[in-house]
Amino acid sequence: MSDHLRVDVDGHVAVLTLDRPAKRNAMTAGMWTALPPLLSELATDEAVRVLVVTGAGPSFCAGADISDLLGGDDPADPMADLRADNLAAQQALRSFPRPTVALVRGHCIGGGVELAAGCDLRFTDETGLFGVTPAKVGVVYPPASVRALLDLVGPATTKYLLFSGELLDATAALRVGLVDQLLPAAELEAGVRRFADVLASRSALTQRAVKEVVGELIGGADGEATAAAWYRETIRSGELAEGVAAFAGRRPPVFPWDGMAGS
Image (cartoon, one colour):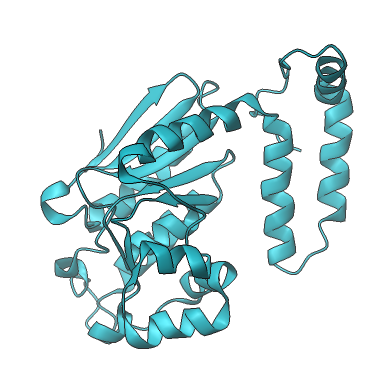
């Protein structure tokens, strides 16, 4: 437990819970600050193969705690420290080396969308309500956050959300690509867990390679050198040999690569 952030590990699945339900899990300055070291510690846990990010109670995250917005020491830029911590937290989540899934109930607003967009995949139920609201308070959204939204929903929807601050219900969020799965509320948690278990059973090496190559492609690189390095690792580690042998033997693979080494 760290400043309203709770982690539970069950088997190969870690669940990071934003635990401030009385405030719809709005992120305090301390929560943004605590997130990168918490994720760094989880990344060194060999047991963890998948990370699920969710909120306590009926909401995912109602955004940044507005009481912190103007709390910085520099009167010329009172949001400077908060912005730096927010961006560092987003980057830490995007850089987490294993698959990440946001489990979203209820409000997912502003900083909540930043956290959900920082995950690899997003699951919600019919209560999901999504919005990005800087235009309501006169905030200029930082380019990294705009980019993450742009990669998910494209320029028109990004502008719609940022211009208007209007909210999208779960069906609309699914339609524009802001979420990947819409499940009945009664099935959401179990559905995410089933999918997390599927991810945990797959090749961690393949998943790590995909994360890095996709990141490079989004950033404008060709990904060729990274993909080639990871391919060599499939041979060196025995990952490919085990996958082929398991397929031929009609048995579940026991992949040897533990997700801890770099490419």
